[in-house]
Length: 325
Image (cartoon, rainbow, N blue to C red; front, side):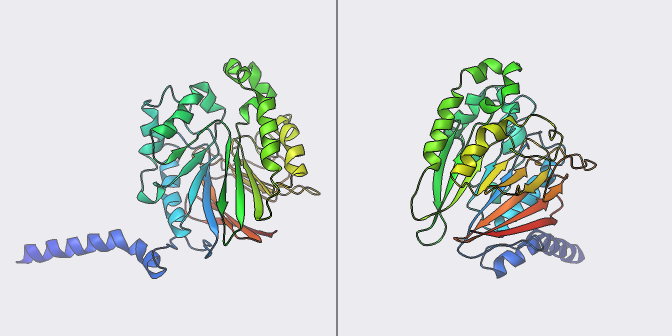
């Protein structure tokens, strides 16, 4: 009898241990609230952004994944954005490459992360077979990369919409043409992509409230590449400013960063800390917020306001940014 009582007690303790984190979610109507200080707003379009993550679970990638699962539950994220360098060190060879499981499927396995991921290609993805990452969209229900660059709109509330534009910034990086994957870049038509970008951004729909562009390479960085020639800025910023793009999101640099350059319309975010990060890194350029620690960002869009939160792998709210239309 004593043995049965102990077993029942252990079972009850185990159940409590598995469910106590979800109490806040139940109290909010299955919407979460696990990360202290995380902001979630009714009638907002909310999503998470993570980049430079695919390291087979190493470099705190598993910790980031567990925290990301909590965050997307807390905001009931509509989708997740991946800013490139999805699989290290050399991308994938095919849609059946074991690295898909090692660095993506078996790391981001938590139930809350089984929602749409919209991805772009990073420079490390070009080391392998970049087309395989496009084609993986036909294999995975959650991986979405219908082309090397693409766009879609999402409703916010009522008839209001946000435009999301996903770029392949690799062909815009002049230095990359001397790399081992230079011939792959030469096969791309960078001028055609820029013409497509201008046509896409020229949308004058009256219900379009926000224009958001996503690419792997940042236009502005205070990280390791701060002193490099900013080829991506030269290529993109004229169009970002001409068409009043509200937000440019990138990865490439392994930290979290926000900068609103003086006199510019576009606000720049870097979320490239999905695995490797140097917590001793000191900023080398201008920034409004800078955190060299593994983590990601969440975005909450309303018709006239955006709330962005940078969250560490430990579940700490590092910084909150609010701005109006």
